[in-house]
Structures are given as C-alpha cells and as structure tokens.
Amino acid sequence: ERFRAHLTRARLFRAPGTALVAVSGGADSVALLDLLHGVASERGLALVVAHVDHGIQTESGKVGKTVRELAMGLGLPFELGELSLGPGATETTARRARYAWLREVQRRLGAEYLVTAHHHDDQIETVVLRALRGSAPAGLAGIARRGRDGLVRPLLPFTHDELVAHVAARGLAVHEDP
Image (cartoon, rainbow, N blue to C red; front, side):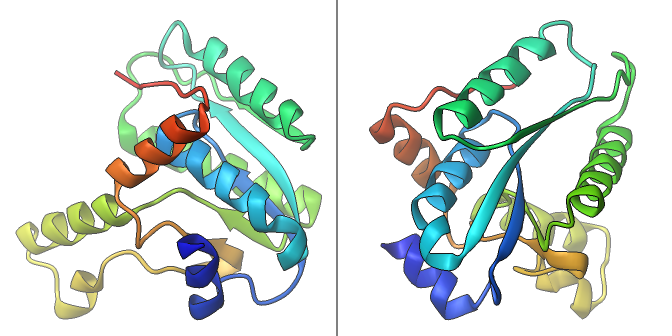
C-alpha cells in the first residue's frame, strides 16, 4: 500500500504504457518487479523485464536464467542483453553499456518508461559522493524520481533493508552480487 500511495502522490506513471523494468536479479530490482507487477493492471502498465549480463563474472549467465524464470513465472516478456565486457570492465563502463542497451530496447519496444530500482540508500550515497566532490547545490539534490525519456525510479522512498525484507517475505529468489 505504501508503494501504491507513493506512485499516486508522486505521479510517476502519468499515462498508461509499456514499462521496461531493469532487473539485475538483486533484492532491490526483484522487489521493484514484484511491486510493479502488483499495480501494473490498475496503472495501465504493460511490463517487460530486461536483464543485462555484463559478461564480467564467469557465473553471470546463471543470474540471467533466474531473472528469465522470474519473468516467465509472472507471465511477462523478457529481454536479455549480453554485453561481454570482460573481467577488467569498470563500473562506469558497465553502467554506460547497460544504459545504452536498455535505451535501445526501450526504443525498439516503444516503451514509454524505463524503470530502475534506485532506492533511498542509493540516494544518500549519491548526495554524499557529490558533496565530497564539491558539487554545486543543484548537484546535491540527489537522484530525481523521474528522468529524461521516461526514466522512472519509484523506490527512492524505500531502503535496501525494506526491499530485502519484502523479497524475503514474498519468498522470491535473489542473487547477491559479490
């Protein structure tokens, strides 16, 4: 109910449409998918699950299979991006490649929304890092709930611990990234 109320109050999905949901397989994104699935029909959202295998870790293909099974269990379409970046790829390289692939899929599907699982803890981390880098006041605002081209981050009011508790209570399988 808290998630539903937040979506209404923040007007994150202003019109019906297709929502491409980025699911890494971790607790945050699995909780996002589960919560969105629970409200999709009342919001007029058609969900599509997207998972990116960066090809950095040798076992990463297994995570994609788990996310595919989760999508299939919910009756949702699944998109897999296999990037083959290799073990030397930096987080910055991986993020840029991931977003480029997600945006390409969003365009190909004509999806109105790209939904990510950024949460309250990510918000705090972003503000602290920007402050340490000497960001101007505008940079200290943190992560926006809505971004360009339909980017939506509906979990910003929720902590990582709350999302972990949600997936545990629902008995959902998650991957803990080392």
